[in-house]
Length: 294
Ligand SMILES: *[C@@H]1O[C@H](CO)[C@@H](O)[C@H](O)[C@H]1NC(C)=O
Ligand SMILES: *[C@@H]1O[C@H](CO)[C@@H](O)[C@H](O)[C@H]1NC(C)=O
Ligand SMILES: *[C@@H]1O[C@H](CO)[C@@H](O)[C@H](O)[C@H]1NC(C)=O
Image (cartoon, rainbow, N blue to C red; front, side, top):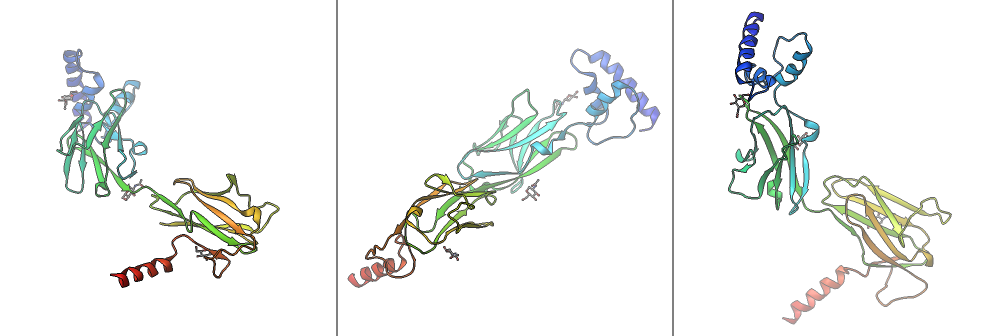
């Protein structure tokens, strides 16, 4: 549109504004005058009023910083947020990419799957897609769309994961010979991202790796499965007690360590460290017995 055309359009719009001033704001008219208002548009120029008009003329756009990928837990209600500025009177819809399925239009749920619902509080610019009882298969791209011509959309990824699990190998009880090395292995699985930190406690006190006791160290290997090894050399009686592994984004898990002071339980055969829990050999043995017995 040349400068003359623009002038003409503006004049027409101003005339319209006078006619319709009861129901419409001037900036809305200006937006519709720019053919839906998306894009940056050309032209422009001076005047304070035109600054407001120009920001409105930009039309609806997404605030990406408030419309991000989401990781949710299986079974726990998930929310995808879409923040739209300058929405005006347009309608917001949510579409699932996997099957191009229209889920919601405005505040109405369009799909027969009633787990999906659109949530919007009038005073906000947020349009949230609520997904109740999410399952792993709900993972994928979702797009919020605005009914401009042509429509604009912003897609985000939902990952539905099972709750992170923390375990300590050998829990709930470990028996260690005095003088040998206590090696506690804590494993964190199904965490959407590796735990930023894992700290260990002994009888509820955070373990100090610089303590005068010495010989205490921790090695943490981060990954899809994160493993933290707590090593305590030259185990002694005061080292007995409850040890807990505290990942910053998963449940705490504990193990009770018994430092054996010259005692020799029948189950203990060789090696400084014995794990009485899950004795694989014993399990195999009982399977054989059952087979023989049938
Ligand atoms: C939005 O408002 C404009 C006028 O500002 C009108 O022309 C248009 O029909 C309205 N759109 C919807 C979807 O209500
Ligand atoms: C969102 O997830 C998609 C798909 O996994 C990925 O391609 C994209 O980079 C992610 N965006 C952000 C901002 O993390
Ligand atoms: C500690 O035990 C784990 C197995 O649970 C083993 O992989 C690791 O090598 C051990 N570390 C030391 C220093 O013995």
